[in-house]
Structures are given as structure tokens and as C-alpha cells.
Image (cartoon, rainbow, N blue to C red; front, side, top):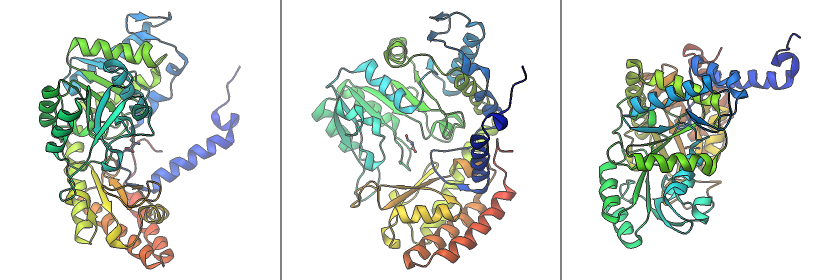
Length: 419
Ligand code: DSN
């Protein structure tokens, strides 16, 4: 029986996928946690591997028929070990939140204390924020950033660790524009006998490409998603150097929290890791940072208030209060102009999380399209024009003009993976 294509079976969904592809092609994507995967990664995700159950690990499964899957997962593990320089990697977590939950399951009991960065300061929900299971089922203590510098205060982290004796300390987060001081966190964790978890989801590609220091040798466990700067499919990994920690993590992922791994994702992670091991990826990671610095300089010169005054990595967090507009109306107007961002709380924000003062932007996606510093300066100018027009309450003409100009730019820099 001949099989029908997606187009024939479900034209409505097929057309919506094409519409999303057009939207992605025509937009300057500045969301710091997103990227464009390569055609090769995209191909691997849409394969028959989705048909297979594989509870367990290579060589020790609970279903037969693993002749091929075992090879794929083993390749993904070996590539992760080589790219990040670790002894152990688990490539099965479905995404970042389950990966982080597995760390709790591996090392803590309910009610134990976790020290993590507060969400409004740039931490992640799963680092012990109150609405997350990790904040409800464990005892969270939070550190932040200094008001005067916008940077993590390592003296505060140490004082909180000594006072509360956490079993687990998280470093890393989702809105941190500066380098994470892994050695300083490791020293504090050792002093209080805590497990140090480095959540490198945002910066994994920068670490793989040598554009950010590595937590290896400092953190006991490392968690990362695979779809941000690393340019893989939506998935996650857990890594460790000690056998003991690796065994605890493996048991926590399966059977602790998850069932069968998503084998199509595992294959795509393997492909992304192969790409990340190539010399071009080093150049990519370095350019992501150069672009972020160029964009930050342009925005700062136009009066934008950058948290911590700039960036060391792929990410810029801005407080729009001096521009006279909230983060949400600014992000909405920018999106209509073809500049995709997200509104975001800034440290010490006086507004509510759903209507905060800031926006967060990043350069992983525009760099994947081949854009450089000149394009970043242009993007900074467009952002200024739109935000200034929104503050004046008369943005429609500016939005329409900028959108046309954005379309001209995106046409010159085709995004990977899109047809
Ligand atoms: N949603 C991710 C981000 O945007 O940073 C974190 O989970």
C-alpha cells in the first residue's frame, strides 16, 4: 500500500509547519536559548528511530531489537565524552528540567537543602524556585547578584552555603550574561561537602567550542540541554567524571524518572556532537561571543541599561526602565518588526514576572545564519528605533519599515536547516 505524505494526510498541520518554517526564515531570532539545527540534525530527528522502545542502557535493555539503537546511543555517549572531556555521559534525559530533577533524585532526599540562583536573578526554575517541584519538595536557599555590579557575589554564595549547609549547589542559569566562576563554586561546595552541579544548558556550545571555561574538574555533575548554543535537537545530557556519580545519575534517569529514551533525539544529539567537534564549531562559538559583544556595545551606546554592563557570552539582559517602556510591550513590538526576543525579569525587578522590566536577547541563532558584527550593529539600531517609538506611543510606521528592512537582511543570510 502506498503511503501518503503529511501533505495528503493532514494538510492543515503540513501548512502550519510550512508557515512556521517561513516565520523562522523571515525573523531575526534573538531568543538566547534557541538556535537553528543543521539539516543533518533535523533529518536524524525525523526518522524510524521514533518507533523503538529501549528502556535501559546499551547492552542492558528491557526490550529486544536493540542491535542498532545500542550502537547509536554508544556513539552519542562517546562523542559527548570526547567533546566535553568527561568520563561519563548520559544522553537520555528528555530535556533540561528532567535532567536537573535526576540530579536531585541521585543525590538528595525530599526536604534536603539545595542552594541555587534565584529565578529573578537568572537562575532556572529547577534550581529550587518556589513554583517548581524542586522548590516544593526540597528546601531551597537562593543566591542572587550584587545590585551595584549585576554579578554573582561569591561571598554571598559562600556565606549562604556555610549557614545552610546545602547537599546540592547549582551554578549556571538562564539569564546570566557573565562567565560562571566554576573554580570558586567548587571551592565552596568542597568546604560544605555539597555536590556541585553545573547547569551549562545556555553555554554548552560555547564550552564545546572553547569560548567559555569548562566546569570539568570542578563540578561533580554537569547538566545541559542540547538545543541551545550546542545546536542539537531538543534534548539533554548529564555528565560526570566519577564512576560513583555516574552510576547514581544513570539510575535516577532510568528507572528513577524516565521510561524509554527518545532514540530519534539520541541520534540527532550524536550528529550535533559530531558537528560540535569540528574546527568550524570553534569559529562559530567565538563568533557568537564577538557578536554578543558588538550588539551589547551598540545597545549600550544607545542608552540601553545592560545588566552587569555588558556580556562575556552569548546573552544580553536589559532593563528597559530608562527607555520608558516595559519588557512585554517592547518584546511584542519587536516581534512584529521581525526581531524575536523574550521579555524577562531583571535583578531587583519591581514589576511582575508576566510583565517585567527587561528583555533578554542572544546571538546563537543569528550567528548560525552567518551574521557578523556589522549586522549586530544594524540589529541594535533597529531595536532602539522600535523601543523608542513604542515609548512614544507611535510605533506602527517604524515597526512596518523595520520589518521590511529585517526581511531584506534575512533574505541575505539563509538559516541552516530551512528550505
Ligand atoms: N527555557 C529556557 C530558556 O529560555 O532559557 C530555560 O529552560
